[in-house]
Length: 169
Image 1 (tube, rainbow, N blue to C red):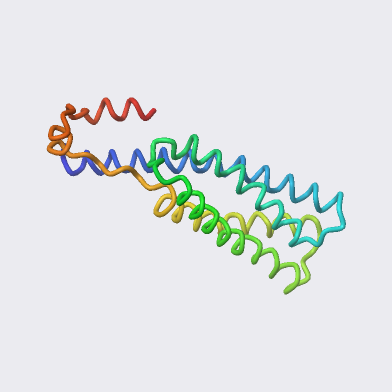
Image 2: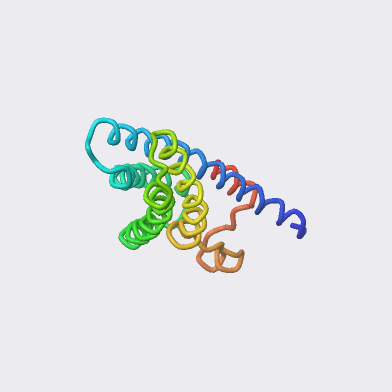
């Protein structure tokens, strides 16, 4: 395969990964905002506390979506490690997400329902960039690519790239 063809294949895979990550993330956003507004309007919780609870409900929802759909073809051998790293990076994302809301609410006094939702979503957007990078780099690690020599040495025939790509879809 030419360098240009290899680059095109990598970009296509990245585009599919971003689309799947975005779809799970969009549903997670809906869960997060719905739980946030439900808690905000039905309880006496402070804004940031309601946001933190909503964030962790969305994190649990997202883990299921990422593990069983977005990254279903990734290494599954170390689930405990994977879950610990997922929770660690999700917690960092939660600090980013809720830090934006905290700054807006307590730093600037922007505490109306509309303002709270705007800054909640802005925080989610910023945290999403961090989460995408950390999840794909550290949590849902790609399986090592098998070269033709290693595959033949293990007694298996190499799988053509077109066949492997069709299986992933």
